[in-house]
Length: 197
Length: 197
Image (cartoon, rainbow over all chains, first blue to last red; front, side, top):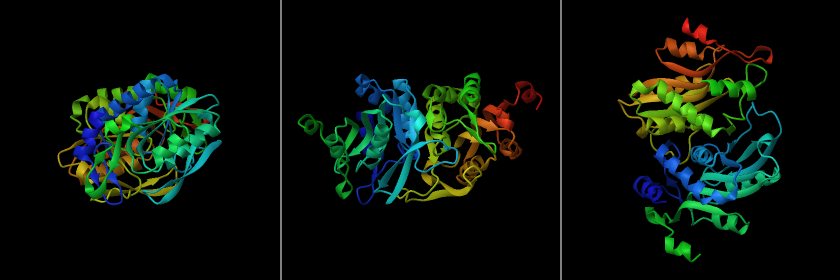
């Protein structure tokens, strides 16, 4: 996705320890036109998957998630990272470890919003170790639903999440794939390399 | 906004202590078409305000915020409720107390995203005591910007936030205004009453 790659190159800032800061357009300030294009691209890629719901996790997944849900004409659910006082009924709970924040969160989804037979598209802003995506997938499967696919805005292909998710049988579509952030330089997985995967 | 009022009546659940649960379309599962209409309505109401940015707070403000930003053709910023490891530069910080969750959060916005002269539209899902809206407004003003208005999806008109914000000089536009949740019944501030305010 050329527009997104351009944004990553022109506005992304490499911090230490494999962290890419994209807070000018993706996870603090957000570009609504880019988010709309992300939603359209996920919709194009997962068009044949008969998606019934989009599932993401607060907070940075919500904007790409709602745009994808709009294009797919289905509801969005966002998993919460801690229990809310207004969620009193039965909930699905999974533990997710964040390597960036070095803490575990419980992510929760109300049982009434994913029912058996549902085909759920998981959307998130970043994929690194795959912890969040696996947690969301376990919730879908606990509910008797099927993971229709996993749509990622930015994949850190130098971390194992994508590989692990694919080995577990999930279809993963990442709009940009970063090969390396070493020495402060953002390099992408080349299209040629992807074709010979 | 008739579509929204219909959703509140048909899907809203009154819990104790003035809490209205709208997790089927606004703050857990989200209806993307409703969110788009919310964005269009805020854009219509604030059309003359020369808005340069939309500002909201994670997490439930993000979906109405991004749709409003899309319609207004400006960026969205969402304030974070805790400091993130990837936000290392200078930030604006304000304390906000949540009566629902009975805890204080620090809300933060990166200094680079609101600059002097900016006209900022604040958008949030709920208005009750006005804590979050006041915190966001203080951040805008710390930055040398102007609050162009405050757009609220659901106002609890039986709590003082709206009145306090208006007394402080802010323009508040709420898409639905709830007069009471007493005895489990949702009643609205009537249009007639609003006209004679």
